Image (cartoon, rainbow over all chains, first blue to last red; front, side, top):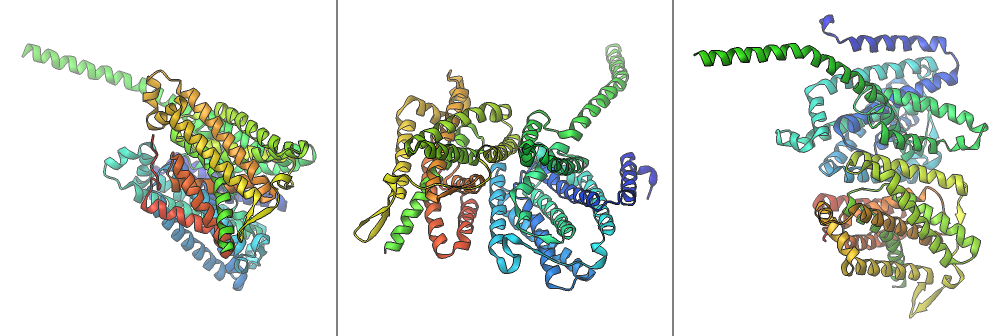
Length: 348
Length: 286
């Protein structure tokens, strides 16, 4: 592999990941470690959502169903089988296959529809999964949920931290590779102009379905990590609140970038922790969802690009400006050459 | 026999409530191509303010009036603050209305408290009577009659008055209406307010029907309204009545025979319609 070809940003991201490896040795408090683990998990979930919202321009209000599928299949497998690493791997495989099948079916049925229908349909489908989890008591334990045991190594907070960090980094680089590939470019083309992409000969439904399967599988994996971090699962993994959380993370951080959802997940996760601890100060903080909702509305109106998107836009505008400045001499040169040619014509 | 007729009446009553919610949704979509995910929020605000004033004054009529006024005011605020900045941008509209739904739902808990509130129908609508061996519960009959009344009045306004003509023309081609010198923005606002008022009325009527109100029921109920709008055809007023009755009756029968599947059957209905007739059973007509 040619090291010189690796982008500068890749080194930066790798350096940050290495820094994060050290963190659990400095921050030893279990609750703080738990919050960071949750942040990693939701960062994965938010990135998978951004593949849909930010890269392909599909709004799904039911993305939480894949998260829930992952969480429940892990919990059920770990509950029914011995708590060994082998059954954990089995759980991951089942979670991924189930999510792939469900997202494929849902995608093929609905992605040819307009964005409105897709948003509504996915909202309703997630509702269906929620009701299903509540009603199928023999499997899911209903609203109360159930706990399950884990192999020794996953119970340790330190190793769980490393597992989540490793997953986050791998998925981040994997998705980054995906979005920079020709496939990712087609997705972005669909986001920008669906009809034009179609008339260029791309089968947009295929691309959308593949994007939704990728997003579904990654979300399901986030669900797996979520349930093992809690060692407990209940119907809240299918709740609409979860979808709204992940929407907020993606939108605040910046749609159409992968680092944006990670930053958004961090902000929301820490703000959540901080606001709930403020509940003793004033009762309004108990209803922190209102604050979330208002922030969210303001962001949608005023900063539709999110934090990262807004910064990037400013940065790139400056870069473009500088490029134009650099290009100007060449343009003069071109014009000069043209004049020369004109003279040649006249003389000839 | 009386079981089936009871279930049909239940279904009709539920259907009418869904229709009131879906009617606003479908008109707003047809005219402004805005899909209002905050509609369920207007529904619960109608329910809570209506019930609050009903329990305070003891008069059900006052409750209904308060609910409608709340709906009109909230519709005005929603249109001005939430929808207007994002006209024409579908993705932003969908995102922002869902966020507003959340704010509305949580604000209910701040203003009226997080607990469920029990509601009973007013005295003159309590009880039931027999015709032959078919039992009629008065409150359900009242909902059906009111729903049909709203439908016929709306149809009359849409078909026979000037404002109705403008609305129907706007559904077909808004640019053309605007170029004829009509302030389409004002029409948008009015339609949005009326749609919100219908949602609030639906919430208020739903309260004594289910006997209890809680903040999350807005989202639950609006999912049914979405299903209805999809089945009936986006923008079609009569279509939403037909689909609402269909969904209501399917819901009532399934809730009796296979309670676990009552939402699933509606989802199935919607899926089948979407696969075979993505534009809905009825097409939006002028």
